[in-house]
Length: 83
Image (cartoon, rainbow, N blue to C red):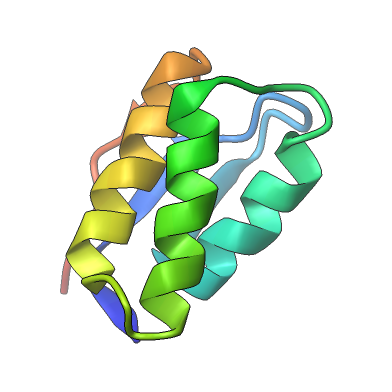
């Protein structure tokens, strides 16, 4: 399920602008990032995103958990442009 507003950020590894629109996409990013980061915000984000893909958590809760993990990791979050 797509989030109401995508999360747009600058990838720390590549410097590229990234846009994540769902819990499933967030899991893919967190899985790659997990090898470098740990801690409660990252654990909470991955668990909440997995739960959201199983419909055991709200998609918007997964979005907020993902945003929290990005902020905790010092990732620059950009404003999302919603059509």
